Structure formats: C-alpha cells, structure tokens
Length: 207
Image (cartoon, one colour):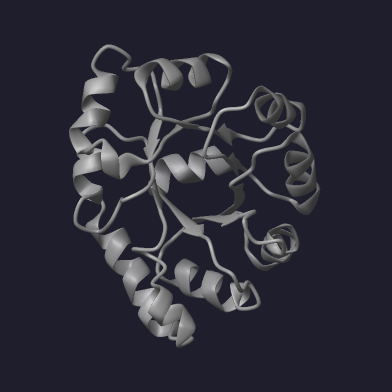
C-alpha cells in the first residue's frame, strides 16, 4: 500500500515531537506493536531527517514514515532523500507544495478556514491538516464537509482518545495525534509497555 492508503485505512498518524530522538527506535517499535501504522517525525528536532532514514530501514511496507513541521522546499528534498513517505506542514506554502509534487510525496498542509482548506486542496494537497482542531470542535469537520464533501480532512491539535471517535464520525479522513498518544512521562521513563498499551487503546477505539 502507499502511505496515503495506509493512513486512509488505519486513520491515525502518530506525531513524534520530542527533544531527544535517541530513543526513536524503541518508541516506534512500541507504537507499531500497539497497532499504529503511520508515524510522523517533526523537523522541530534537528535529528529528525536522520531518524526518518533509520526508521525506514527498520519498518516493513505496512508502516508509513513521514516528516512533519516541514516549511521549506529544502526540507522536502532532505526528507525525500531520507525516505520519508509523506509530508505534513502546519501551513500551506507554495514552495513546499511544489517540492512535494516534484518528488512525488503526499502533502498534508495545515489550514484553518474553509477558504484556506479548499485552496490547499485545489493546489493538490493529498489531505488537509485542519489545525489547530481543538479550537474548532468536532462538528466543524462535518460543517466544512457538508458543502465540500470531496475533501479529505485530517484534524490535528487537541485530538485525544475521548474525542477521536467523534471526529471520525463527523467525516474526518484521518487524525493527527501527538502528546495524548505519545505520553511524555512514559517516554521519559522509557516505559515502552505503557506506550504500546496506549497505542492499542487508540486503535481499539476506532469506529
């Protein structure tokens, strides 16, 4: 399956935004063992590109590894060379959009209003990251899709185990999930069993 097909099928993108990626292998293994099949490493960490390359060697074709917080064309080219299978950004930028098309990577830019969302889609986004979703609410997804049912929307920011099902039932294509899934305390304690169980809880909560 392609990365987009994996995300469409499994509905969850785990967002790894950490200061220390030396434990990326153990963390990714715990998430995968818990049923997560799409993992995004954000470029807010300078080691993210090399981590993506390492993870691509670790996982099989059932898992998609992507790059997040991508805001320049140079970053797109770097993560493409590292083997990233999808690109996520908090914003829509023409140069990032063009670079993703150039290297044939699915692009999921961030947008907030219906106008921004539609513009991103019409410029070729594979899905639109509705961000920050916690300020909009779950019904917002349904309201946007009512006149624009062809869109693929991926709420991100404030998505957790208690509201994820409602986001999906309101029409979300997939969900970006960060700190509520990748518990900082569990990571600090290197409690991979807890992280694996948390991932399994999310997977089990899917409709």
